[in-house]
Amino acid sequence: MRWTRAAGRGLLVLVVVVAGHVGAGARAGEGSAGGRGPLTFATAGDLTGYLGPLLEGWNRAHPGEKVTLVELPDSADETHAQMATDLRGGRRSRFDVLNIDVNWTPEFAAAGWIRPLPRDRFPLKTFLRPVQDTATYDGELYAVPYVTNAGLLLYRKDVLAAEGVPPPRTWAELEQDAKTIAPRHGLDGYAGQFLPYEGLTVNAAEAVYSAGGTILGDEGARVTVDSAAAREGIGFLARGVREGWIPEQALTYKEEESKQAFQDGRLLFLRNWPYAYVVASAAGSPVAGKVGAVPLPGPDGPGAGVLGGSNLAVSTHARHPDSAARLIAYLTSEPVQRQVLTRGALPPVRAALYEDPELVRRFPYLPTLRESVLAARSRPKSPRYDQVSLVVQAVVHDAMTGHMTPAAAVRRLARELAAISDR
Ligand code: GLC
Image (cartoon, rainbow, N blue to C red; front, side, top):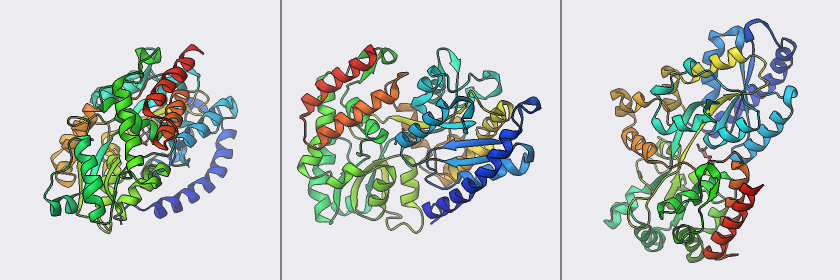
C-alpha cells in the first residue's frame, strides 16, 4: 500500500521532535530582516502521509526558511481547538502558516488571528471557481485555497454487479439495496461520518441540501433550517440507524474509521471524500478493483455534496511573514499542486490539472471529481461557524440515536442557531 497511516505517523514523530529545536532557534531570530526565516506549518492530520516529503522539497531549496510540520489530530474539531488556543496566545503563538478548513476563514479573520494577504502574489484566477469564494472575508483576501474536496458515494462494484443493479441515484434505491443486498453478502449497508464533530455537520448539511433545504441564509444572519426539507434530510439519517441499514458503529466514525470499515470489506456503501476512493482502490487494499464512486444520491435523483478542503493562512503574529507568503505560493504552485494529487490523493485547487491528459489517464475519476467540486454547496457561512457546527452536530446526533424526532431536531436547531446569531 502506498498510503499508510503508519508511514505518515513515523514521519510525524520525527518532525515534531525536530520542531522543538527549530522553534526555539527561530523565535530567537524573530524580526530578522525582510521577514524571512524559519516557519512552522500547522495542519490537521495528514491522512495520506504526503506532507512531510512535500515540505522537504521546500526545505532543501530554502535552507534559511526551513518549515517545520506540526501535525494536529485527525478530527477537524480538535484541530480547530488547538489552533484557536495557539492563536489566542498572540505573540506567544507557535504557528506561522495555518492549513485551515475552508469554513474557518471568516471566523479566523474576524477574530484577528490571520492577516490579510496581497491578492497579486497568488494565482487566484487559476483555481476552481467555488474554492475562490472560500478565501475572502469582508472583501479582503485572508487565505489562499490549497486543497478542495467534495463528498462522493463509494459502493462495492462487485456486489452490485453480482445482483445486476446499477449504483443508487436516489435515497429509496440506496435504502433498498442497503437493507436487502448488503445482508445477503454479509455486509453492513451505509455509513458516513456520524460521530459528533465537523464530519457530522458535513453529512447533515448534505442530507438537508439534497432534500432541497438550507441551514442559514444571508452569510449566517438568517436561520432557514425550519423546513419540511430539513426534516426529510435528517429523517433519512435517523431512519437508517433505526432500521439498521446504518450500523450503530457508524455513530462513532470519522473519515478514517469509516474508510477502514469500507476498505476491510464490511460496508456496501460509504459517503466519504475522494481520498477514501483512492486509498480503498489502491493495490493491496482488500477491496482493490471492487470500488465505484458516484455523486451522492438525494430524494428524487442525485443530491448535493458539500464543498470541503482547506486554505492556507498566515498568523497575525507569524515570525517571518514574507517567508510565510513564499511558502504559500510554493504550495499552490502547479508542480506542488500536482503532488497534492499524485502523492496526497487530495483534490488540487488548480483547475487546469483536472484536464491534464496525463493526470486524467492516471486518475480516470478526475473529470467526475471536477464536476462534483463545481456542483458542491458550501456549508453555512458565519464568523461564528464553530458554534453553528457544534449545534448541528449535537442535535443531529441526538436525532440519529433516537433521542429526538427529526421534527423536534429541526425545531431545536432553529432555536439554537437563532440564539447564536443574536449573541
Ligand atoms: C475534510 C474536508 C473538510 C471537512 C472535514 C470534516 O477534511 O476537507 O472541509 O471540514 O473533512 O471532517
